[in-house]
Picture 1 (tube, rainbow, N blue to C red):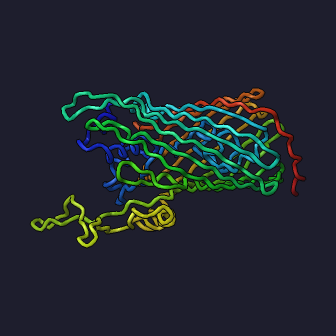
Picture 2 (cartoon, rainbow, N blue to C red):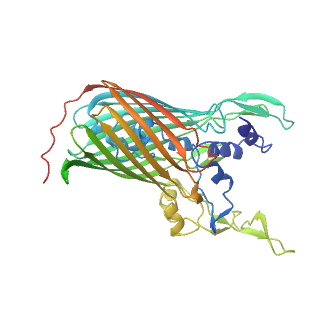
Picture 3 (tube, rainbow, N blue to C red):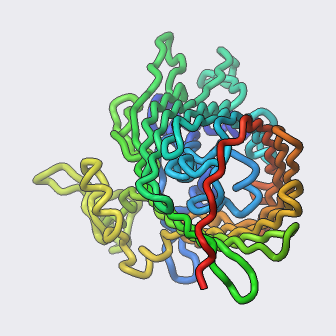
Length: 426
């Protein structure tokens, strides 16, 4: 993990800033977008939004991972809590459980992995409960002193535990709420003989899901779905003396599933995602009195001791204010705000509800991280056993996300009594 070692030795005072750099760079946001955050691209400033514990935004399963990371309005499954927990009430089975493994950033390091265990149970016809455990291992890191001599090994990890409830309010609409405990040991490391503390916080998800009755689409039968989810709404997480936003997110999606004939079904889905976190502002830099040129030192307000902001808004605000501010604080105005919306599109084909083929595309503007990739996936059902796999194909060469694959093994038991379809609408 040479890249990781380099990050850990950037400074003699690693306890806070470099740990956050490590967390941000090694997870979901594009590594090169992070490093180039002060540069220009086509006349626009590269200004990605960074948060602590961004592993919470990594797609944890291979089904949605094979469809470009769509999930707000797809069919309910064991991994629904991550995408839209309110879907669980529409599950057709009484209970299920599954496990996914995802090797992460294999182009850079060999031992970073994300593990995800999820499950649900139908309490009755209208209510379902679920839970999940997400474990992110950053592998082994060799710590060295200022002379480059190895002092110890460090194996940081982060995890999140969820519980969720989904309730149907009608035959077509449901609401969901999930509670989450988040823990990060990335700052729990020895420096000068003392050990740091693991950081932790809590969060909630609020979601809703709509599934129409079957209706005629030409000479075919179709179902329309839509979903809205506010995820990871919670307190800041504290590393050392600084508090940092977690990846609070707004996900809005829609889908259309059509029966081609008795054996063939195809679904098309789209998601929009936006982080509900303040955008970094553009700070004002001091002017050299001799040369008259801008220096690399940020100007400080002598009255408040705060950095002087040239464009944008102060990001160091309370959580509620940060959520509201996230819709209007981009230094580049409305154009930059629109660039903070990521688009996911997915396509899923089923044959006889037994074999599935999936594909999708995820797009994030280059000024906000430049995660742009295609995905492909397959799935098999055999009685109660489901096996799904997916593979990620970046649009840019030498992208850290290359070689990302996921495998999910799940089990669904005891088919619940299916509700009678409402009459097909003319």
